[in-house]
Length: 114
Length: 117
Image 1 (cartoon, rainbow over the protein chains, first blue to last red):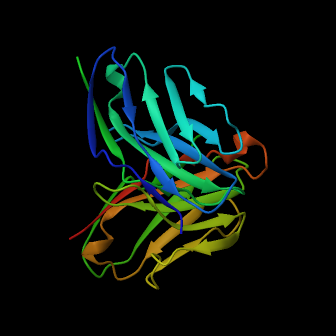
Image 2: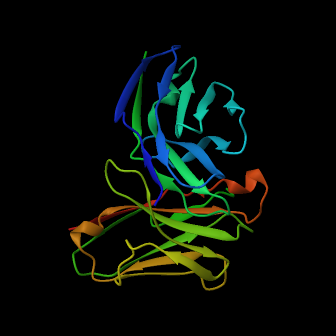
C-alpha cells in the first residue's frame, strides 16, 4: 500500500521569509500524482499545488513551488515570501492515475510569525 | 456558491445513536469521496462513488457505516450505533471524471464534525 510521510509535525517561519515542508512517499507505481493541500483553521481544505510524476519539471504556483525527486520519492513544498495567511495545516497527498482516492500524510502545522 | 457543501457542520450525539450526514458535490462532478479526519491526523479514505455506483470501500468502513448516492448527485453517510471512537471530522470531496490533468483535483467540502458523548 502507498504511504505518505511528513516528518515535521510543526514548522514556523518569519513573515516574508522562505520555508520548506518535507514529504516522502512510497509506491511501486511509475505514474501517479502528488499534491499539497492547505487546511486553514476551521476552514476547508484547498489545493495548493499538484505534480504529475511523469513530468520532470517542478510545479510552481506563484509563491509556492515543489522540489520533486522521483528516484528519492521526495516531494517538498517551498513557500517564498511567507504571509500571515499562509498559516495552516499542510498535507502532502498521493494518488494513482485514474481519479482514485487520495492518500494523505499526517500534516505539518505552519505558523507564520509577524 | 458552487462548491461542495456538507450538512450539518456539527453534530453532537450520544453513544448508540444513529447519525446521517449529507454531501452535495459540485454540479456535474461524477466522483464523490468520503474521508475521515481525526485530531492531529490527515484525512483517511472511507469510500467513493462514480455516479451512483459505490466503487471502493476502505477497511475503515465497518458494518456500522453505510454510504449512498442514489441518483448520482448528493450522497449520505450514515453511522449506526455510534461509538466514541467515531468522533472525527467527516470530509466529502468531489471531482470530475476524465484524463485531463485538471480532472485530478478533488474539491473538498467544509466537513461535518461529529462528537459522540
